[in-house]
Image (cartoon, rainbow, N blue to C red; front, side, top):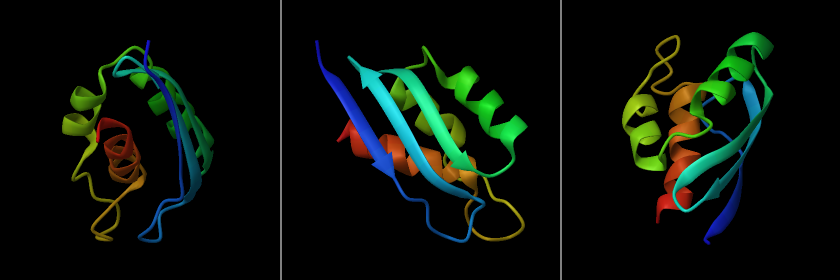
Length: 85
């Protein structure tokens, strides 16, 4: 059993301030997003639980918010990449 936890500080001026992701055997088990729109971050977290990390990265990476070149979902993909290395 391969369990990992990543604590990630987003960049690019997004609203979320910290992301904590727990995984086991390449599957997301828990996501906690601190800061940002509470409803959206809770919804995103619940949707990702049970998803394979690679699939989540493919779905989230590249999403842009307000022409920042990134977004909270994109930053979550960056956090997940730290696990998949």
